[in-house]
Image (cartoon, rainbow over all chains, first blue to last red; front, side, top):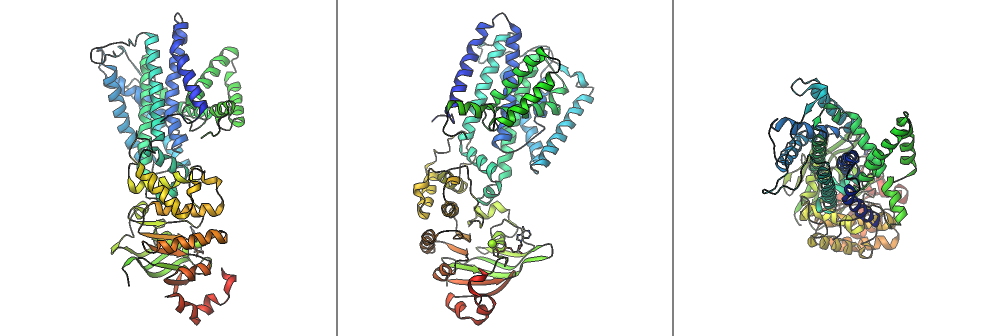
Length: 323
Length: 252
Ligand SMILES: Nc1ncnc2c1ncn2[C@@H]1O[C@H](COP(=O)(O)OP(=O)(O)O)[C@@H](O)[C@H]1O
Ligand SMILES: [Mg+2]
């Protein structure tokens, strides 16, 4: 059974990952661009997890960056400073701890909905931001540094060296692909059926016997742990974490990217993140007023494209139905 | 007479000063259709909302199979077998008719916490959903989006969803409102056949259908219980005629 919803999605994923696989071969000497694309992929993972929450589960949050930051901090705090640790084991640690944090946070924020949930997620993430910014142990505004990157051996086989930019790039690409497949499978599952139902009509879902709180909590935990994974990758790429990772601007920007890509389309998160970051990069070099032009362009795109860039793509390809 | 399945004792629902339901007591028997009639604003929907757990009672008790369930969570009512349809069509418009019934069936059949199994792999759910659609005569619409079927068909779908939850008690809030004659005839026939398996509570303005279907009838006015009796007795009761049936079609 196909995981794709429509033709445009299939085409995009195919081309994106085909190009993604070969592009380092053309950029072999240009480490700057490889790093740039890696960071865009990491952002895409983060935005995808947010899109699952907002676009698929109907839970609007302005505090998603909290988990992005937490992912980075957890690794930096729990990993021994001058010892090489295993990437996969620490992925497991980072995601489990974040999932646990998300369970508790979710328990609180999911008591509310709509505008109240936006406010409370924002408040909690700002609290977390100031906690790390004021903390002496965790380096305050400067944050913490990672001195030694993890190694990635599985059963003694070591095929990725995280100090090598191309290798790190491929790790990010693989992560994005897994993340996409994971969310698509989740969407098509029996669990996804309930999520679809309670997003569209929570009252009816309750009348049919579903305890919607449980389902929302699970969706929240899943999305938050993946956001933490993205933050963990970010920390590994740059070798540091600091509180700005979890500022509300990061949450808001990710929300704009999700909107730009087309809410709820999942693959639109990749489109949104790349379009936004690409635009940012180009405008930044053209004019010092890039923020102004960027704002105008994004408002224009969000207003003219009903379902974001993925909707536009869908129209161009001529999908019969764009879910 | 058959068993009492669902029972309300001194049930009250106040909206501020408004007594939408006032010290209301009623008993519903298995394998019967019990109709509730009364003018608009009488509190019929309020009663169904309380019986289905959608509203919390101000005070009073709801007893289901001999046990009080007044303080149960609203999602627990459906799980324990009390299914309801809504007066205002309440379906998943972006989903197909089949999917609407699958959502309804899945809660009872299970698998809602299967994260990696495709939703269409559970044949029991599909089967239950298809059989519910067939009962209300919507088999041909299975693959059509719920937003694209006619209003009458949406009302049928609403009932199919209740059936898909495999209930013991069915609370129907004006199922035939807005239906054409032919469509409501389908529903009348359907309810006739369902009677042998379920305890059915029917709120309905179509008096022809009510008289045809009901074993028992309750008339209520202003949140209060006026009378409960068999159809024939109600028809000939002067009290009811004065208070209610006398000015005939106008009130409905
Ligand atoms: N959610 C609500 N808030 C305030 N008043 C309500 C609400 N629901 C119903 N009512 C009031 O309760 C009374 C009974 O309404 P309802 O049960 O819908 O009557 P019926 O279904 O018999 O037409 C009406 O006066 C209505 O205005
Ligand atoms: Mg009503």
